[in-house]
Amino acid sequence: MKQLFLKSIGILLLILTPLTAKDFTNSIGMKFKDIRSGSYMMGTATPKCPKDNPFTSQDESAECMSSVNKSETPQHKVKVKSFYIATTEVTQGQWYEVMGTNPAEHKNGNPNMPVENVSWYDAQKFIKKLNKKEKTTKYRLPSEEEWEYAARAGSKGKWCFGDNESKLSQYTWYDGSSTHPVAKKKPNRWGLYNMHGNVMEWTSSWYSKTYKHSREHKVKILRGGCYFDDAACTRSAYRIGNSRGSRKNYYGFRLARTK
Image 1 (cartoon, helix red, strand yellow):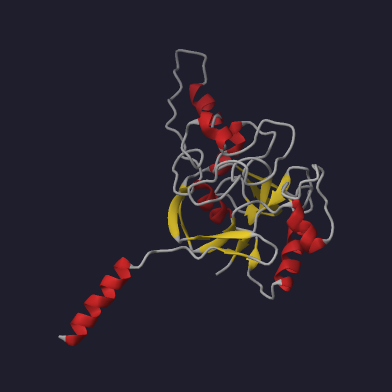
Image 2 (cartoon, rainbow, N blue to C red):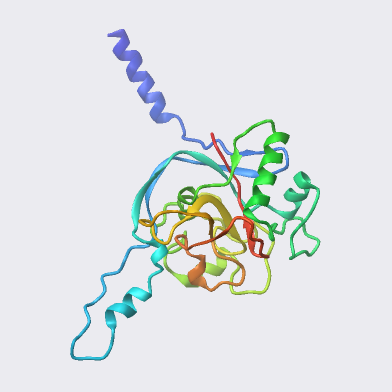
């Protein structure tokens, strides 16, 4: 009877205990969110396209299918383990703190501008030095599965806020001429900024032409769209691949951290 009572009390305490996230800030001021484990539908669903009408010259089926970015298909369920991810893209100030340089092309004197013009290899050098500085091995790039999970923040729509494109400018910069300081727009529901637009973000994952296609080694995935892209390229499911040594003034990254 006593054991049953104690067990009941334990269950009650578990229910009443708030599920607080263990967010943290590291030694150079990078803020990280505790992302809970979960599952979601990754990618873009293939539309139900009409069959071609044999009595017209229109290729309706092909037109419908061409509207889909095939690298985002087939949509599939993914389970993600709990991890930490930075609330913003790595900034020029954070890069300078670790590396002692600033490779960015878009400079306006503000250290909170995102660092860009960095390759996947450059990101690895930053991670190696930061891990050494903090005496850990847990900092890394997110996988694309983790990245999209974090970007969606529970949304099943094109963006973290749904499908209403008119709201996009509230969350990020796109269709412009330059990057902008991080964390100046609305965050998603999980407190993450600029998951859409500003700079494209390197991930740890290898690129594939579709989710059923074999991985193309030497080509890594970037996510998120950038400051000059149209809205479609800032969607949560949007993905491109490039060689690990490629540097562009819209290639940046965001850190993840293993628990």
